[in-house]
Image (cartoon, rainbow, N blue to C red):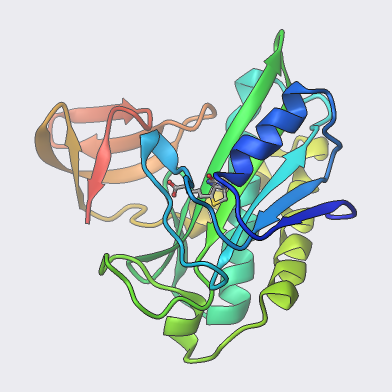
Length: 242
Ligand code: BTN
C-alpha cells in the first residue's frame, strides 16, 4: 500500500481521479492519489468536503480486494473506519469513536470522513476507491461539530509523517478482510461505536425520535431500539441529531 503515490497540488476530487484511473484500466492495488487542495471535494450523500489547502490530509486509496463479495462491502468500510480511528487515537488519546457509518470523532466532534466508492463486477467488488479526509492542522472551524488533531493536542503535525503512520494503521485493519473474520471485525467496530447502547435522537422521514443504537446488521444497517420496537435503517434513511 502506498508504493505508488500520485501527489497533486490541486485537483477537483482525489476520488474522481482515482475512479477515472479504475475506469481506464490503469489502477493498481494500493495506489494513492493525494492532494494539497480539492476544488470539488465530495462527502457522503452529496455533501461537499471542504478543507484548507495544505493544512490537512485528503487522499484516495485504490484497493483491489481479493474475493470481497458485494454483499460484504460494509466489511471494507468497517476496516477503514477502524484503521482511521486507531490512528487518530494513537495521536489524540482516549475519546475517539466511529459514528455510524464511518465518521471518526474525537469526543462529539468529527475529525475524519470516509467516502468509499466501489466498482462492482457480478457479485464481487472489483475495485474500491477509499477517500479519506482527515483534519490535521486545521485551527479554524465553520462548524462547531468539527475538530482536528492540532486543535485537540495543541501541536502542529508534519503531514507526510502522519500519512505514513495512518497507512500503517490501515494496512493492519485491512488485514482482517482476507481472513474473513467478521466476528472479530464486528466486535472491534461495536467497541468503537459512538452512542452504542445509549439513548440518542435521530431523524427519519422528517420525524425526530429517541432510540438506543444496539448493533449493526451484516450489511451495515443500524439497529435502533425504540419505545415502539426495533427499527433498522440504512444510511439514506436516518440521521443523527447530536
Ligand atoms: C464524509 O464525511 O462525508 C466523507 C468525506 C470524504 C472526503 C475525502 S477527501 C479525499 C477524498 N476525495 C473526495 O472528494 N472525498 C474524499
